[in-house]
View 1 (tube, helix red, strand yellow):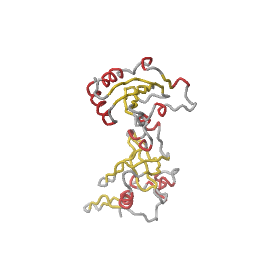
View 2 (tube, one colour):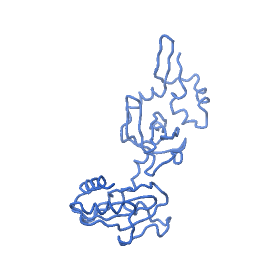
View 3 (cartoon, helix red, strand yellow):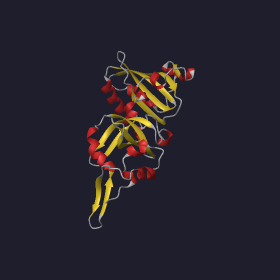
View 4 (cartoon, helix red, strand yellow):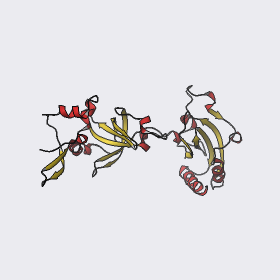
Length: 263
């Protein structure tokens, strides 16, 4: 005879009957046969503690690998992220992983509860498995493209749902660089292999992602020797055209040098 704490029950039970309390779910299990693993044994005190979760980990953890994608259900939401139950091919939720707050969205997330709630159905990607500690780390945002690694048209899509002036093309001299960006571009133009750097377009997003200046090299294929950089601060996004004899890796290296030099 041993003790099975409520938190050590399989998530399958609560996912099948989300309207029931954990006490009601446990009471309905009386008389049923379930697989458990001994997680604590004290012979002197004649004490045994069981875990159904750990028994399922032993059975199903070898079936998952880093990079696998699962349909899942949010079990609980904490300040640091959300615990999510993975649904297997039999339709049951056997394993649970954590989506850290930093992996919920590409946007800055102040409160996970603004995006995820208990019971939400989500798609997740396994990013790390610690088999010794029975832990799975998950990501939601890695199933979506980082908008800042695309062109300005991807960041601010022109589908008619945004204001007509949200995206504009101007001469670089007509666009005031984002705070701190002007110095970076001037320094970048001094690097060997970089011939010209100019702001070509700017746009405004619906919401603020970060007030700090962010700068990325787009993964959009270069046209000739022209590459695209994206800069963002607040709601404003600026597209920068960079003409260079360097390849993408060379430009990334030049960017790192300049960013380390500029205060």
